[in-house]
Image (cartoon, rainbow, N blue to C red; front, side, top):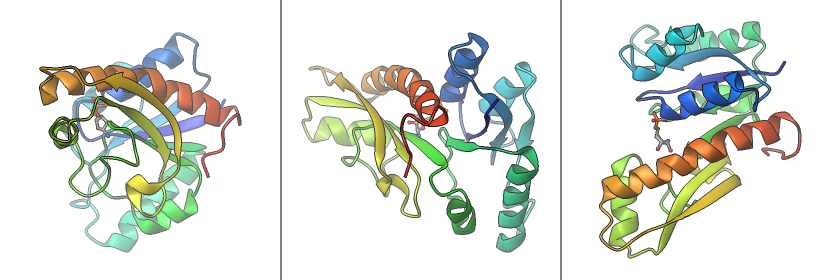
Length: 198
Ligand code: GRF
């Protein structure tokens, strides 16, 4: 069974969709652990509820960047993680880690990359920008993580319409539902070797 790690800072609804797909037998993978920089994140709670190892991992515990990076790498190596998943993770990964796991780190972004990615494009800001730009459609993108965050190749996208009268919150909800469909699907395709991340 392929092993995955999931990094999440917030509510962890994408984590939940991955857990659900695994438990329903639609995704052949095992979550080795869920890691969060935020000790009170809902994501860690969700992991514990499903008896998945939940790790609070923060720069406060490891102020030395080299030790932080080494610890992260060692944790992955000793757990035999095949694929690293970012799901609403608000911290940058150490560059040495991104290099060591090149082609084996995925992220989900709430817009149709390469549009509306990069600096400042996270959370509700993304949907505000999409509406402000007068876009007729938005969506979710799964992409490979490279050293320049939102620039890694897009592996899978699902479009959703932007409807007249949409608020950023309404659009965010529509996009999030698409995220919950495509992230588990993309993970399965990568783990089965049907798509190559890099
Ligand atoms: C999602 O919109 C995802 O695209 C972005 O962060 C959000 C995480 O939501 N990277 P959740 O914690 O999975 O509910």
